[in-house]
Image 1 (cartoon, rainbow, N blue to C red):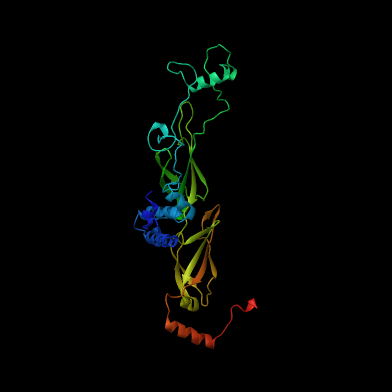
Image 2 (image 1 turned 30 degrees about the vertical axis):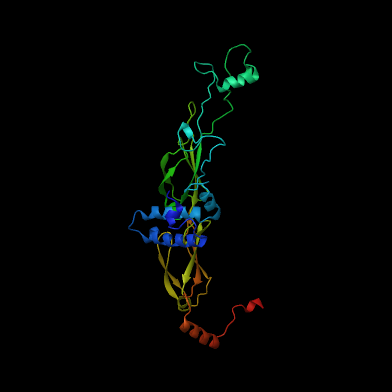
Length: 318
């Protein structure tokens, strides 16, 4: 993935508020529901969410700025103290250096790891008869190599519901296209058989992908339900209105009744997340938003209304 600062279009010294504002604007602009004719919008939206997950989080942002994690949130190998920058399989580029320990005393095999152990145990290691001339033998009956690889993957809320195909980069540099099943949950692990590390004489390990769901610009996940804060105007709250409300399946018309207070919650049945045998609900909470700036006409109207219709919504407080 590209540099998260570049993705969100903010400088490295940007404040948390500036990052949050940039993320919201881009998420709204590139949301798939608003770009139904653009097949690339979902990928851009996912990239924006992934970038925000890194630099929108204070701790992860510090780790990224220090070079401890990469743009996908994966740890960067810092190298062993005093070690060179050789990578896995002896090539350049980070990771671990691969070594092979051989047992037996074949041609050119002198000075191996078994010779060190034999010198330490007087040639009698692991039941060897003194003077037998055999090299040190490893008992692999109870020792297994961990050849599994673990990576993290972030998907959008829409991708977790509908499923998707995403490309993942492994620690060894290999890249794979991975099918994310519909209905995947945060923290769920996907296992790909035989896609892990390999070692001679051993079956290949597996690739373990732990899924996380990126924060959504509108919805909050509550189990199998979704929650949404719906901004409404003062006159919509007083007079009532029909308002288009976003859902995972597309926007729907929703009637706001007259005299709706801020904080009132409505339930849209079956508009949440799929679950076994049913679907969760979407809970919509109204938030009355006043216009920006001072409005003399609105103030005069409220003063007149206050004088003619006084009431105290905090009377229960005493």
